[in-house]
Image 1: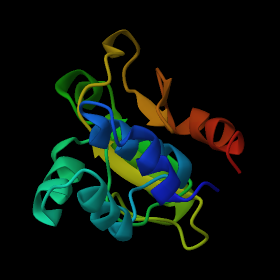
Image 2: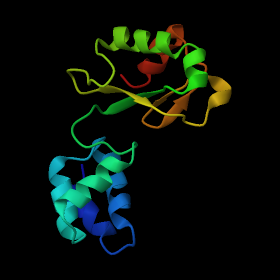
Image 3: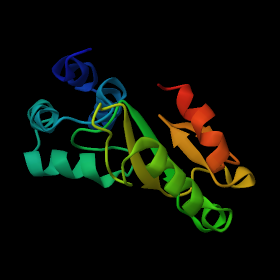
Image 4: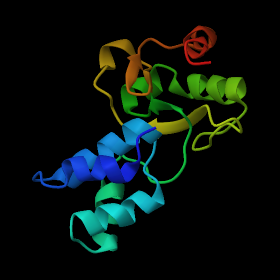
Length: 148
């Protein structure tokens, strides 16, 4: 696993580089460690509060630990009408956690998200940004098996 300080330094001289650095850190760690925010603040010569603000402004970026595989379910109206609540219940039962939680082994985190642009195939989940459409409770074991 690459050190977040090395990742930050690769983007240090680019305009808007802090956002790119955060994306690269999250790709490596599945989240942005708290210490990486302080390192980014120093590298990009800004107050820690501003660096934290950048990290928390974008819904895609997450500060603090989360699972290796991040499962996000769309909670927009089309997915809701198509049965997202049943998919949420099935995910929670299958993984033994509630929305917003991470499994004890650190493999999965469940999160809500807004529209992922796949409204033709509702309800939609993403796992590590890979979309799965027309999801039903019956399809979940097969989808999750790819990540276990």
